[in-house]
Length: 534
Image (spheres, one colour):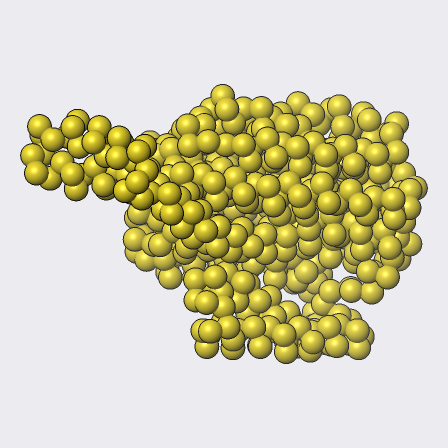
């Protein structure tokens, strides 16, 4: 996930002032092997987004279940991000990354063999949890390997690679599933996964583990956090399909989530070495920055989820066609990167953030005008506006959130800040599915209300459809025309539902403008801000 590239900046050791300016080729190769691993882990969130219909058909999953292919991965990664820094200090970057790469590769192979949605969810959880250990390690390694004079070059490179993965994910996924099958979305990880595993194992040796840290490791806090997040996500995701608290499983999950949330927060504020530093929220800018990071997660992953749903279910596009449309956002994101980077040093970052929120919200609002006939060119402008807005959000939000924190608190707060974007994506996807379920039922009912025998347009449609099919189907022509009408009503209800969901997302982004006057002006917009934001 792009947002987690700096999740554990706290693991970055300070380089000595006399650091050698020459680069060791072995370390360079080792670093780029780690970058490849990070790329794979981030890519695997979005690579399935354009191919959900194919996966759904292959697993015989329901439309309300298939979202878990992404959500389960996100939640598992969320749990791993706070752990990765501590684990790297305990067992070393070499062991953490090599184990993560090997486990991620094996989980990918298992995902390709899944025969039902339950198996796929389990394998995606393993993928997300283990793969999450690779993402934050890369940024920490960059500060360990590279001398200070090279960091201004390396940091943007990491940011661009971290951004490239979600940008091309839907397109790569669409091509693989169209040219081969959805299984190759996961099989494609095997060869690079093996290369990364052995490359890191034999080449990474720039830090050592410290087993003494195990005595302060917060195992209880980890369990409390995992149960809290898992049960909360289950209740949010499954609630709409099971009448919420009318269902015993939902009631139990919500109760357990509430209980473990209280215990988690209590543990966090009382344990000497908490797994997540929540005290950073006492800083106003950091708290508001995390709120904006959460909003970005909703928009980034929500929009990437909704567009393929529309194109697949309403338009019937294949995965390759969906990927081609989704690629527009990435192209304009790259185009905006140098512009946003240059303006970050000249503008008040609060103004830049407001502009990004307006643009992204405006792009989503434009997409809320969709009709059942929309294709590439109709989506082009909304996608372009959203893509252009992304860099105007990433850079200022990072500086706003972390720019007023004292140095002693900055490193630990960085992980929590990036965690919020992942949570925004996971909870946002669950919320989107909730809205879809509720609004579809409403629009279906309203459309059906107008289909009465006294409606002349209805009778004209049925007569025309029956006339077209009567010669071929005989007495079955009337039944076929009614089925055609049912498909048309469903198509329109789905379009209206997805348009409503886009409006809700637009309102969230526009509403975010309200809190901007509460922000204090950050001290600086560091050159590496864009990389850290990714």
